[in-house]
Image (cartoon, rainbow, N blue to C red):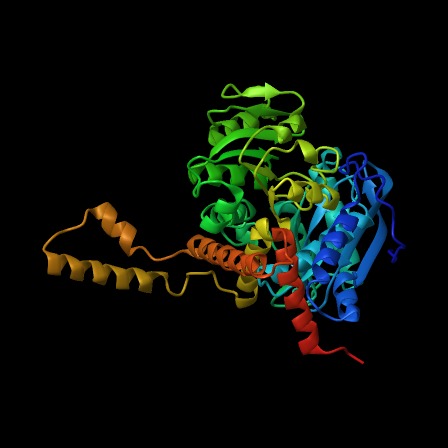
Length: 486
Protein backbone atom coordinates (compact mmCIF):
# COMPACT_ATOMS: atom_id res chain seq x y z
CA UNK A 1 0.00 0.00 0.00
CA UNK A 2 1.50 3.32 -0.95
CA UNK A 3 1.45 5.87 -3.72
CA UNK A 4 3.20 8.94 -5.04
CA UNK A 5 1.44 12.07 -3.86
CA UNK A 6 1.06 15.63 -5.01
CA UNK A 7 2.87 18.20 -2.91
CA UNK A 8 1.31 18.70 0.50
CA UNK A 9 1.24 22.08 2.18
CA UNK A 10 3.39 22.84 5.21
CA UNK A 11 0.90 24.88 7.20
CA UNK A 12 0.62 22.13 9.79
CA UNK A 13 4.32 22.31 10.59
CA UNK A 14 4.37 23.94 14.01
CA UNK A 15 8.16 24.27 13.80
CA UNK A 16 7.61 27.23 11.46
CA UNK A 17 6.94 30.43 13.44
CA UNK A 18 4.23 32.88 12.41
CA UNK A 19 5.22 35.11 9.53
CA UNK A 20 8.04 32.83 8.41
CA UNK A 21 8.60 31.13 5.09
CA UNK A 22 8.61 27.36 4.59
CA UNK A 23 11.81 25.38 4.99
CA UNK A 24 11.79 24.26 1.33
CA UNK A 25 11.34 27.86 0.19
CA UNK A 26 14.38 28.86 2.25
CA UNK A 27 16.56 26.05 0.88
CA UNK A 28 15.59 26.87 -2.71
CA UNK A 29 16.17 30.57 -2.11
CA UNK A 30 19.69 29.82 -0.89
CA UNK A 31 20.28 27.62 -3.94
CA UNK A 32 19.02 30.26 -6.38
CA UNK A 33 21.17 32.96 -4.77
CA UNK A 34 24.33 30.87 -5.31
CA UNK A 35 23.36 29.29 -8.65
CA UNK A 36 23.50 32.58 -10.57
CA UNK A 37 27.14 32.97 -9.52
CA UNK A 38 28.27 29.62 -10.93
CA UNK A 39 27.83 30.14 -14.67
CA UNK A 40 26.33 26.68 -15.23
CA UNK A 41 23.53 26.26 -17.82
CA UNK A 42 19.99 26.82 -16.55
CA UNK A 43 18.85 23.31 -17.49
CA UNK A 44 21.67 21.75 -15.47
CA UNK A 45 20.92 23.98 -12.49
CA UNK A 46 17.22 23.04 -12.74
CA UNK A 47 18.17 19.35 -12.60
CA UNK A 48 20.38 19.88 -9.56
CA UNK A 49 17.63 21.85 -7.78
CA UNK A 50 14.68 19.53 -8.40
CA UNK A 51 13.77 16.60 -6.14
CA UNK A 52 14.05 13.48 -8.32
CA UNK A 53 11.67 11.14 -6.45
CA UNK A 54 9.19 11.34 -3.59
CA UNK A 55 7.34 8.34 -2.22
CA UNK A 56 4.27 9.16 -0.12
CA UNK A 57 2.70 6.19 1.64
CA UNK A 58 -0.14 5.35 3.98
CA UNK A 59 -0.06 2.00 5.71
CA UNK A 60 -2.07 0.27 8.44
CA UNK A 61 -0.58 -0.70 11.80
CA UNK A 62 -2.37 -2.38 14.68
CA UNK A 63 -2.12 -0.06 17.70
CA UNK A 64 -3.73 -0.97 21.03
CA UNK A 65 -6.04 -3.45 19.33
CA UNK A 66 -7.21 -1.02 16.66
CA UNK A 67 -6.03 -0.32 13.12
CA UNK A 68 -4.30 3.03 12.66
CA UNK A 69 -3.35 4.42 9.25
CA UNK A 70 0.12 5.98 9.35
CA UNK A 71 1.36 8.63 6.90
CA UNK A 72 5.02 8.56 5.84
CA UNK A 73 7.42 9.81 3.15
CA UNK A 74 10.80 9.08 1.60
CA UNK A 75 12.41 11.59 -0.75
CA UNK A 76 15.43 11.02 -2.98
CA UNK A 77 16.55 14.44 -4.07
CA UNK A 78 19.51 13.66 -6.31
CA UNK A 79 20.88 10.55 -8.03
CA UNK A 80 24.11 12.11 -9.30
CA UNK A 81 25.78 9.84 -6.72
CA UNK A 82 24.43 6.60 -5.33
CA UNK A 83 23.25 5.61 -2.84
CA UNK A 84 21.17 8.54 -1.67
CA UNK A 85 21.54 9.27 2.04
CA UNK A 86 19.50 10.95 4.72
CA UNK A 87 17.80 10.49 8.06
CA UNK A 88 14.31 9.44 9.08
CA UNK A 89 12.43 11.63 11.53
CA UNK A 90 9.37 10.76 13.60
CA UNK A 91 7.28 13.87 14.31
CA UNK A 92 3.70 15.04 14.04
CA UNK A 93 4.92 18.03 12.00
CA UNK A 94 6.47 15.94 9.20
CA UNK A 95 5.13 16.74 5.73
CA UNK A 96 6.30 16.52 2.14
CA UNK A 97 7.63 20.08 2.06
CA UNK A 98 9.90 19.38 5.02
CA UNK A 99 11.11 16.01 3.73
CA UNK A 100 11.95 17.44 0.30
CA UNK A 101 13.77 20.39 1.89
CA UNK A 102 15.84 18.10 4.10
CA UNK A 103 16.62 15.78 1.17
CA UNK A 104 17.81 18.74 -0.91
CA UNK A 105 19.93 19.96 1.97
CA UNK A 106 21.48 16.49 2.26
CA UNK A 107 22.49 16.60 -1.42
CA UNK A 108 24.30 19.89 -0.96
CA UNK A 109 25.73 18.82 2.40
CA UNK A 110 27.24 15.61 1.04
CA UNK A 111 28.79 17.50 -1.86
CA UNK A 112 30.31 20.22 0.29
CA UNK A 113 32.12 17.68 2.51
CA UNK A 114 33.00 15.34 -0.39
CA UNK A 115 30.88 12.40 0.74
CA UNK A 116 29.83 10.41 -2.39
CA UNK A 117 26.08 10.26 -1.75
CA UNK A 118 23.02 11.91 -3.22
CA UNK A 119 20.61 13.47 -0.75
CA UNK A 120 17.60 11.69 0.71
CA UNK A 121 15.26 12.06 3.68
CA UNK A 122 12.37 10.24 5.28
CA UNK A 123 9.67 10.96 7.81
CA UNK A 124 6.76 9.32 9.61
CA UNK A 125 3.98 11.56 10.92
CA UNK A 126 3.71 10.33 14.49
CA UNK A 127 4.67 11.54 17.95
CA UNK A 128 6.86 8.66 19.21
CA UNK A 129 6.06 9.59 22.82
CA UNK A 130 2.49 8.38 22.22
CA UNK A 131 3.53 4.81 21.40
CA UNK A 132 5.02 1.88 23.28
CA UNK A 133 8.32 0.35 22.21
CA UNK A 134 6.45 -2.58 20.62
CA UNK A 135 4.21 -0.22 18.67
CA UNK A 136 7.16 1.84 17.45
CA UNK A 137 8.84 -1.35 16.31
CA UNK A 138 5.77 -2.38 14.32
CA UNK A 139 5.55 1.05 12.68
CA UNK A 140 9.27 1.09 11.86
CA UNK A 141 9.30 -2.41 10.40
CA UNK A 142 6.19 -1.75 8.32
CA UNK A 143 7.70 1.49 7.01
CA UNK A 144 10.83 -0.45 6.04
CA UNK A 145 8.77 -3.05 4.18
CA UNK A 146 7.05 -0.27 2.23
CA UNK A 147 10.46 1.16 1.28
CA UNK A 148 11.69 -2.28 0.20
CA UNK A 149 8.60 -2.86 -1.96
CA UNK A 150 9.21 0.37 -3.88
CA UNK A 151 13.02 0.00 -4.06
CA UNK A 152 13.57 3.03 -1.81
CA UNK A 153 16.15 1.39 0.47
CA UNK A 154 19.34 -0.62 -0.01
CA UNK A 155 23.14 -0.34 0.43
CA UNK A 156 23.54 0.83 -3.17
CA UNK A 157 20.14 2.57 -3.50
CA UNK A 158 19.10 4.66 -0.50
CA UNK A 159 20.60 4.50 3.00
CA UNK A 160 18.59 6.05 5.88
CA UNK A 161 19.98 7.19 9.24
CA UNK A 162 18.63 8.58 12.54
CA UNK A 163 17.08 12.01 12.76
CA UNK A 164 14.69 13.83 15.08
CA UNK A 165 12.68 11.25 17.07
CA UNK A 166 14.75 8.22 16.02
CA UNK A 167 18.02 6.62 17.08
CA UNK A 168 20.15 3.45 17.00
CA UNK A 169 17.22 1.29 18.15
CA UNK A 170 15.07 2.19 15.16
CA UNK A 171 18.02 1.78 12.80
CA UNK A 172 18.62 -1.73 14.14
CA UNK A 173 14.96 -2.61 13.44
CA UNK A 174 15.32 -1.29 9.88
CA UNK A 175 18.52 -3.28 9.32
CA UNK A 176 16.97 -6.49 10.67
CA UNK A 177 13.85 -6.09 8.51
CA UNK A 178 15.93 -5.43 5.41
CA UNK A 179 18.23 -8.39 6.12
CA UNK A 180 15.22 -10.68 6.50
CA UNK A 181 14.00 -9.70 3.02
CA UNK A 182 17.32 -9.28 1.19
CA UNK A 183 17.80 -12.86 0.00
CA UNK A 184 21.25 -13.31 1.49
CA UNK A 185 22.75 -9.96 0.45
CA UNK A 186 26.15 -9.99 2.19
CA UNK A 187 26.13 -6.16 2.33
CA UNK A 188 22.64 -5.90 3.82
CA UNK A 189 23.81 -4.13 7.00
CA UNK A 190 24.88 -1.23 4.78
CA UNK A 191 21.21 -0.44 4.11
CA UNK A 192 21.12 1.97 7.07
CA UNK A 193 23.59 3.82 9.30
CA UNK A 194 23.49 5.02 12.89
CA UNK A 195 23.09 1.43 14.09
CA UNK A 196 24.29 0.18 17.50
CA UNK A 197 27.96 -0.84 17.38
CA UNK A 198 27.00 -4.46 18.01
CA UNK A 199 24.78 -4.39 14.92
CA UNK A 200 27.31 -2.98 12.48
CA UNK A 201 27.48 0.58 13.76
CA UNK A 202 30.70 2.54 14.06
CA UNK A 203 32.30 3.96 17.19
CA UNK A 204 32.13 7.75 17.31
CA UNK A 205 28.82 8.07 15.45
CA UNK A 206 26.78 9.28 18.45
CA UNK A 207 28.96 12.33 19.09
CA UNK A 208 29.81 12.94 15.42
CA UNK A 209 27.50 15.87 14.62
CA UNK A 210 28.39 17.77 17.80
CA UNK A 211 32.09 17.01 17.36
CA UNK A 212 31.96 18.11 13.71
CA UNK A 213 30.31 21.37 14.78
CA UNK A 214 33.15 21.95 17.22
CA UNK A 215 35.76 21.40 14.50
CA UNK A 216 33.90 23.80 12.19
CA UNK A 217 33.65 26.58 14.77
CA UNK A 218 37.26 25.99 15.85
CA UNK A 219 38.41 26.56 12.27
CA UNK A 220 36.44 29.80 12.09
CA UNK A 221 37.67 31.28 15.39
CA UNK A 222 41.26 30.38 14.47
CA UNK A 223 40.93 32.06 11.05
CA UNK A 224 42.77 35.33 11.69
CA UNK A 225 41.46 36.96 8.51
CA UNK A 226 37.85 36.14 9.40
CA UNK A 227 38.21 37.20 13.04
CA UNK A 228 39.71 40.51 11.95
CA UNK A 229 36.71 41.09 9.66
CA UNK A 230 34.31 40.33 12.55
CA UNK A 231 36.41 42.43 14.99
CA UNK A 232 36.98 39.41 17.22
CA UNK A 233 40.13 37.89 18.70
CA UNK A 234 41.27 34.44 17.58
CA UNK A 235 40.72 31.31 19.67
CA UNK A 236 38.05 30.17 22.12
CA UNK A 237 39.39 31.78 25.29
CA UNK A 238 37.08 34.82 25.33
CA UNK A 239 34.12 33.34 23.43
CA UNK A 240 30.71 33.26 25.13
CA UNK A 241 28.36 30.72 23.61
CA UNK A 242 24.61 30.05 23.76
CA UNK A 243 23.29 26.69 22.52
CA UNK A 244 19.66 26.07 21.57
CA UNK A 245 18.78 22.41 22.00
CA UNK A 246 20.28 19.96 24.47
CA UNK A 247 19.65 16.73 22.63
CA UNK A 248 22.40 14.65 21.11
CA UNK A 249 23.78 17.43 18.88
CA UNK A 250 23.39 20.30 21.34
CA UNK A 251 24.83 18.39 24.29
CA UNK A 252 27.92 17.19 22.44
CA UNK A 253 28.45 20.57 20.77
CA UNK A 254 28.30 22.34 24.14
CA UNK A 255 30.56 19.73 25.71
CA UNK A 256 33.30 19.97 23.07
CA UNK A 257 33.09 23.77 22.84
CA UNK A 258 33.51 24.07 26.61
CA UNK A 259 36.37 21.58 26.59
CA UNK A 260 37.95 23.64 23.79
CA UNK A 261 38.12 26.69 26.07
CA UNK A 262 34.88 28.55 25.32
CA UNK A 263 32.37 29.60 27.98
CA UNK A 264 28.87 28.24 27.46
CA UNK A 265 26.62 30.83 29.14
CA UNK A 266 23.20 29.59 28.03
CA UNK A 267 21.35 26.42 27.08
CA UNK A 268 17.84 26.60 25.58
CA UNK A 269 15.29 23.78 25.52
CA UNK A 270 11.62 23.48 24.60
CA UNK A 271 10.44 24.01 28.20
CA UNK A 272 12.80 26.80 29.21
CA UNK A 273 16.43 27.85 29.33
CA UNK A 274 19.26 28.08 31.85
CA UNK A 275 21.75 30.97 31.90
CA UNK A 276 24.97 31.63 33.80
CA UNK A 277 27.28 34.44 32.59
CA UNK A 278 30.21 32.73 34.34
CA UNK A 279 29.66 29.48 32.46
CA UNK A 280 27.54 26.35 32.76
CA UNK A 281 28.95 22.98 33.84
CA UNK A 282 27.75 20.94 30.85
CA UNK A 283 28.24 17.51 32.43
CA UNK A 284 26.43 18.57 35.60
CA UNK A 285 23.54 19.93 33.53
CA UNK A 286 23.45 16.69 31.52
CA UNK A 287 23.16 14.65 34.74
CA UNK A 288 20.47 17.01 36.04
CA UNK A 289 18.43 16.49 32.88
CA UNK A 290 18.80 12.71 33.09
CA UNK A 291 17.53 12.78 36.67
CA UNK A 292 14.78 15.41 36.34
CA UNK A 293 13.77 15.10 32.68
CA UNK A 294 14.37 18.81 32.11
CA UNK A 295 17.22 21.32 32.17
CA UNK A 296 15.05 23.78 34.15
CA UNK A 297 15.67 24.06 37.86
CA UNK A 298 19.39 23.42 37.46
CA UNK A 299 21.23 24.73 40.53
CA UNK A 300 24.23 25.92 38.53
CA UNK A 301 22.30 28.49 36.47
CA UNK A 302 19.27 30.76 36.41
CA UNK A 303 16.15 29.29 34.79
CA UNK A 304 14.43 31.42 32.13
CA UNK A 305 10.83 30.36 31.51
CA UNK A 306 10.64 31.86 28.00
CA UNK A 307 13.52 29.82 26.65
CA UNK A 308 13.61 31.18 23.11
CA UNK A 309 14.06 34.72 24.43
CA UNK A 310 17.62 33.66 25.27
CA UNK A 311 18.32 33.49 21.52
CA UNK A 312 18.38 37.30 21.74
CA UNK A 313 20.86 37.49 24.62
CA UNK A 314 24.28 38.99 24.02
CA UNK A 315 26.95 36.41 23.15
CA UNK A 316 29.77 35.77 20.70
CA UNK A 317 28.53 32.54 19.14
CA UNK A 318 24.94 31.29 18.93
CA UNK A 319 24.44 27.59 18.15
CA UNK A 320 20.83 26.78 17.16
CA UNK A 321 20.83 22.96 17.40
CA UNK A 322 17.11 22.21 17.72
CA UNK A 323 14.63 22.46 14.81
CA UNK A 324 14.31 24.48 11.62
CA UNK A 325 13.03 28.06 11.32
CA UNK A 326 13.98 29.19 14.83
CA UNK A 327 15.52 32.47 13.68
CA UNK A 328 13.11 34.22 11.32
CA UNK A 329 12.24 37.65 10.00
CA UNK A 330 10.63 38.89 13.22
CA UNK A 331 13.36 37.93 15.72
CA UNK A 332 16.44 38.26 13.47
CA UNK A 333 16.84 42.03 14.16
CA UNK A 334 17.13 41.23 17.89
CA UNK A 335 19.96 38.69 17.54
CA UNK A 336 23.16 40.00 19.16
CA UNK A 337 25.58 37.13 18.44
CA UNK A 338 28.54 37.77 16.14
CA UNK A 339 28.57 34.23 14.75
CA UNK A 340 25.67 31.80 14.26
CA UNK A 341 26.76 28.16 13.81
CA UNK A 342 23.80 26.12 12.57
CA UNK A 343 23.76 22.82 14.45
CA UNK A 344 20.21 22.03 13.30
CA UNK A 345 18.98 21.79 9.73
CA UNK A 346 17.59 25.13 8.55
CA UNK A 347 17.32 27.02 11.85
CA UNK A 348 17.73 30.36 10.02
CA UNK A 349 15.24 31.30 7.31
CA UNK A 350 16.37 32.97 4.10
CA UNK A 351 14.53 36.17 5.05
CA UNK A 352 16.23 36.20 8.45
CA UNK A 353 19.64 35.61 6.94
CA UNK A 354 19.34 38.74 4.78
CA UNK A 355 18.81 40.72 7.97
CA UNK A 356 21.68 39.00 9.79
CA UNK A 357 24.07 39.57 6.88
CA UNK A 358 23.26 43.28 6.83
CA UNK A 359 24.02 43.38 10.56
CA UNK A 360 27.46 41.88 9.89
CA UNK A 361 26.67 38.59 11.65
CA UNK A 362 28.45 35.56 10.20
CA UNK A 363 26.10 32.62 9.61
CA UNK A 364 28.00 29.33 9.38
CA UNK A 365 25.63 27.17 7.33
CA UNK A 366 24.09 23.88 8.39
CA UNK A 367 25.19 22.16 5.18
CA UNK A 368 28.74 22.41 6.49
CA UNK A 369 28.51 22.85 10.27
CA UNK A 370 26.31 19.82 11.05
CA UNK A 371 27.76 17.54 8.36
CA UNK A 372 29.63 15.47 10.95
CA UNK A 373 26.76 13.00 11.15
CA UNK A 374 26.75 12.14 7.45
CA UNK A 375 30.58 12.06 7.33
CA UNK A 376 30.70 9.39 10.04
CA UNK A 377 27.68 7.64 8.52
CA UNK A 378 29.79 7.36 5.38
CA UNK A 379 32.53 5.71 7.46
CA UNK A 380 29.95 3.28 8.91
CA UNK A 381 28.70 2.43 5.42
CA UNK A 382 32.29 1.76 4.30
CA UNK A 383 32.79 -0.46 7.34
CA UNK A 384 29.66 -2.44 6.48
CA UNK A 385 30.79 -2.95 2.89
CA UNK A 386 34.37 -3.92 3.86
CA UNK A 387 33.22 -6.21 6.71
CA UNK A 388 36.16 -5.24 8.92
CA UNK A 389 36.45 -2.90 11.91
CA UNK A 390 38.63 0.18 11.37
CA UNK A 391 42.02 -0.35 13.00
CA UNK A 392 41.69 -4.10 13.33
CA UNK A 393 44.44 -4.92 10.84
CA UNK A 394 47.07 -2.32 11.76
CA UNK A 395 46.60 -1.24 15.39
CA UNK A 396 49.08 -3.75 16.90
CA UNK A 397 51.60 -3.21 14.11
CA UNK A 398 51.45 0.53 14.78
CA UNK A 399 51.92 -0.04 18.52
CA UNK A 400 54.94 -2.27 17.85
CA UNK A 401 56.52 0.33 15.57
CA UNK A 402 55.94 3.13 18.09
CA UNK A 403 57.33 1.01 20.95
CA UNK A 404 60.52 0.29 19.01
CA UNK A 405 60.86 4.00 18.24
CA UNK A 406 60.50 4.89 21.95
CA UNK A 407 63.07 2.23 22.91
CA UNK A 408 65.53 3.64 20.38
CA UNK A 409 65.09 7.21 21.66
CA UNK A 410 65.60 6.05 25.27
CA UNK A 411 68.78 4.21 24.31
CA UNK A 412 70.17 7.21 22.41
CA UNK A 413 69.33 9.77 25.11
CA UNK A 414 69.92 7.61 28.18
CA UNK A 415 66.63 8.83 29.63
CA UNK A 416 63.50 6.80 30.32
CA UNK A 417 59.85 7.74 29.88
CA UNK A 418 57.27 7.01 32.55
CA UNK A 419 55.07 3.97 31.99
CA UNK A 420 52.10 6.28 31.35
CA UNK A 421 54.01 8.29 28.73
CA UNK A 422 55.24 5.10 27.01
CA UNK A 423 51.71 3.76 26.80
CA UNK A 424 50.33 7.06 25.46
CA UNK A 425 52.99 7.43 22.77
CA UNK A 426 53.07 3.79 21.71
CA UNK A 427 49.36 3.06 21.46
CA UNK A 428 47.93 2.35 18.04
CA UNK A 429 44.78 4.02 16.74
CA UNK A 430 41.50 2.19 17.40
CA UNK A 431 38.25 2.61 15.46
CA UNK A 432 37.04 5.71 17.29
CA UNK A 433 40.44 7.40 16.93
CA UNK A 434 40.39 6.83 13.18
CA UNK A 435 36.77 7.93 12.82
CA UNK A 436 37.42 11.16 14.75
CA UNK A 437 40.60 11.77 12.76
CA UNK A 438 38.74 11.33 9.47
CA UNK A 439 35.97 13.65 10.67
CA UNK A 440 38.44 16.33 11.75
CA UNK A 441 40.31 16.18 8.45
CA UNK A 442 37.04 16.42 6.50
CA UNK A 443 35.81 19.45 8.45
CA UNK A 444 39.16 21.24 8.08
CA UNK A 445 39.51 20.60 4.34
CA UNK A 446 35.86 21.51 3.68
CA UNK A 447 36.24 24.76 5.62
CA UNK A 448 39.24 25.71 3.51
CA UNK A 449 37.38 24.93 0.27
CA UNK A 450 34.36 27.00 1.31
CA UNK A 451 36.52 29.95 2.36
CA UNK A 452 38.34 29.90 -0.99
CA UNK A 453 34.99 30.87 -2.54
CA UNK A 454 34.22 33.27 0.34
CA UNK A 455 37.48 35.16 0.00
CA UNK A 456 38.13 34.58 -3.70
CA UNK A 457 34.86 35.72 -5.29
CA UNK A 458 33.85 39.34 -4.79
CA UNK A 459 30.22 38.45 -5.59
CA UNK A 460 30.04 35.94 -2.72
CA UNK A 461 29.00 37.96 0.32
CA UNK A 462 28.30 35.27 2.90
CA UNK A 463 29.52 31.84 3.98
CA UNK A 464 26.32 29.99 3.02
CA UNK A 465 26.50 31.25 -0.55
CA UNK A 466 30.16 30.18 -0.64
CA UNK A 467 29.20 26.69 0.55
CA UNK A 468 26.38 26.44 -2.01
CA UNK A 469 28.66 27.55 -4.85
CA UNK A 470 31.19 24.90 -3.82
CA UNK A 471 28.47 22.26 -3.62
CA UNK A 472 26.76 23.19 -6.90
CA UNK A 473 30.08 23.16 -8.76
CA UNK A 474 30.83 19.62 -7.56
CA UNK A 475 27.35 18.28 -8.40
CA UNK A 476 27.39 20.00 -11.81
CA UNK A 477 30.75 18.45 -12.61
CA UNK A 478 29.38 15.05 -11.67
CA UNK A 479 26.40 15.44 -14.02
CA UNK A 480 28.62 16.76 -16.81
CA UNK A 481 30.96 13.79 -16.42
CA UNK A 482 28.10 11.28 -16.37
CA UNK A 483 26.18 12.81 -19.25
CA UNK A 484 22.40 12.57 -19.57
CA UNK A 485 21.01 9.07 -20.09
CA UNK A 486 19.00 8.99 -23.37
